[in-house]
Image (cartoon, rainbow over all chains, first blue to last red):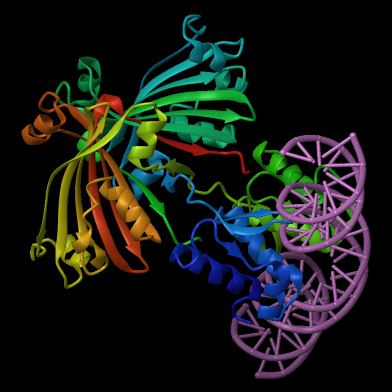
Length: 236
Length: 236
DNA sequence: GTGTGATTTTTGTCTATACATTAAGCGAGA
DNA sequence: TCTCGCTTAATGTATAGACAAAAATCACAC
C-alpha cells in the first residue's frame, strides 16, 4: 500500500476538479456510492472528502450532498521569509544597521496607532537591511509595548533584526500584508543610497495575536533588487 | 455537542503552540495518553492531530512521537482576484481597451518564449484595464497556441478581458507570480497617462497545466492606485 | 567497539457500526 | 397559497478494534 486509499480517492477528485472535468457546482457522488466504487468503508471516503473540504475544493451540505466549490477568489501562497535568512541563502552577507529607536505615546489622531497601542505606549524603530553592505530595504516598525512587554529590556533586538527578534519572542496568529509601489522620498532615497523618486516596493504588514495588535511594519525595498514570489499549485 | 471533541483537542494544542507554552521541538503526549486524558477513542485524537499536521504546526514520526514543528518559513495567502470583478466590487465601471494582438513565432534567443510556445506559435496581446475610464493597468500577454488552440477563433477574448477569458476556457494547475516595483518607460507612461518614470507595481505570472506552459502575463499597475493584499490566519 | 538483526513503541490506515445533526422536500392544514 | 411540522437523505462525529509500517532501542555476534 504505497499510496493510502484515502489519498488516492482525494487525488482522483482533485485531478478531476482541477482539469475542469468536474465544473464548479457539479455534484459529487454521495459517500455510499463512493464506498461501493472504491470498495472501502465510509470513514475512508470521508477522510478523502474532508481533505478536499479543508483545501477548499468542495462544499458539503447535509442532506444536499457534495459539490465542487465555486472558484474562490483566486489565491496563491506568498512566501514571506525573513530577510536575514533569505539574503544569506543568496550567498550574500546580511547586516542590520539601526537608525534609531524610541518609546513614545501613540498619536491620538491616528486611529491605527491608537489601536495598535491599545492603551499603552509604542516602541518605534527604524533601520536598514543590508546585503553585502548595500542597502536593500528600509524598515520602519511600531511595536505595542502592551502586547510585547519584553521589548523594554531587549538589548539584542537590533543585534539581529527586529523581525527575527519578534518572530522568536511573539508568535502571531493573524497577519495582513499590503504590497504597493511608490517613489522614494528624498530622505528615504538618501538612506537607501538611490536616486530620489526611484520606484520602490512597499510592503506593509499588521500582525495580531488573537485580536490584540502586536506590530506594524513598513519595509521599503529598492525597486530593481527585490522580487516577491507567490505560488499556487501541487498541494503539498 | 456544539463543538466537536476532535476540534476541541485540536484547538487546545493550537493555542498552546501559538502561545509559546509548547515550544518548537517539544514533544506532545502520545495518542494513548491523549485518549485517556480526553476520555475518547484513538481515532478522535488522531483526527485532531492530523489537522494540526496538515496545518504544519506539528511533525509526527512513527515510534518517535509527535513534536511541535519548527516555525516554517512564513507564508501567507495572496488574493489574486481578476481585475474586472475587483474593480466592479469597488463600485467602479470596468472596461478593457485592446491595444493590439497578433500571432507570431517565439523569439529563438528567448528561452522563456521558446518553452512557452512548446513548438507552436505565440498569441501576443496587449491592452489596458480601465476603472471609470481611467487606466489602472497595462497588460502584456503571451499565450501558447499549442496549449490553447481555441484562441484562434476567440472573437470574444477582447470583449471581456484576456484574463477572464482564459480562466473560463483553460483551467490551470500551477502558477508562479512575481511582484516587483519599477519605473514606467516613456511608452508605458503614455498609455497609462501618468508621468514618465512613475513608480509602478509589476505583476508577472506564469501558469502551467500539468507541466505544459499556458500563458505569461505582465501587468503594470499605476503605483498609487492599486495594492495587493495577502493574509494569514484564522484556520477556518 | 561495531555492525546487524530482532524487538517494541508509536503512528498510519482501514473497517464496521452507531447515533447526531442538518436541511431538503413533502404533506397537512389554515 | 402559505406556513408549519414531519420525514428522510445526506453529512458529521465518534467508537472499538485490527493490522501495517516505520524507526528508536536493545541484544547479540563478530
